[in-house]
Length: 145
Image (cartoon, rainbow, N blue to C red; front, side, top):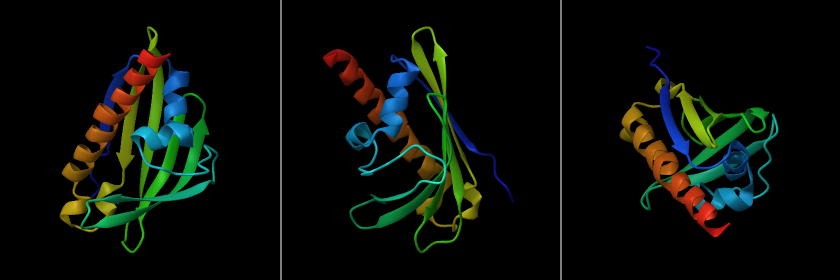
């Protein structure tokens, strides 16, 4: 059964170019997302990173499918050693000097039926990453500029 994509929206007090930089520049990404040295927002670029709990780390394997600065970044999202593949898409919309980010994560039902891959686990993860980490990072950058 195909489940609906996970869709989340956040508004940041920063212009789209600044949010795009946070999403795509490795020096900025490691401050709020993951350390992905050499990351390039170019279709076909492959990258990986490890994340999870101290007891269980998961190697994420990704490939950029779309990169249109400063509007859209999309990539595949799979896990080394596990079946399934999904796609993550970030879309940025300028709104009165701010940026509305819409995240769509499709294909979650393709992963194993385990708690780590449950929809709620992705919801909690993205809420922390985008709703807390990225928001705080952009606010700190605004305060220091």
